[in-house]
Image (cartoon, rainbow, N blue to C red):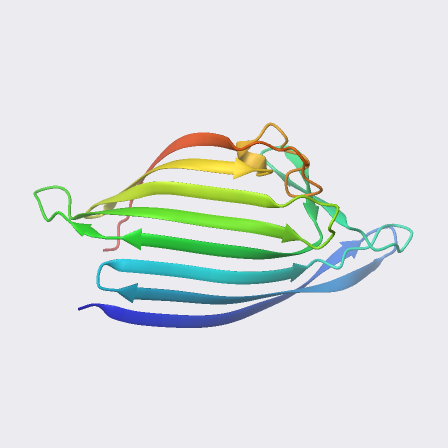
Length: 180
């Protein structure tokens, strides 16, 4: 019987430099996590609290901060909590090529501090196929106010949209790992 439980605590201190004011404000993020294995089951949970503590050029406290990825800027709420849950079950196969298959479901929600902002949600049911050094993830990602899954790339992690719909993407990710 495989039983294991892990708890963790982490924190991050960082600052955002404002060039116009030639000053920086310090922000902090903290996280608690648990990973539990019981027989063929795996559970992961995490709570993250973040506060970028950003200020504008007039020294006003900012509720939205712009970040960028893939050549485009997008908004991010400067303060919030993130809740993450994941559940997986390992099915041993032990055949010529496939060692095991692990169906999983992961869910996360970004609960933004300002009540006028709308949550970002991400739900991913899928399966991992383990073939020695090759890991293949096949999943169906769903998101609501989730920038990489919606047409509302700019506002999803910022204010969000009140009537945002669930959008989806089918995903296959194959990775080859050299150190086994």
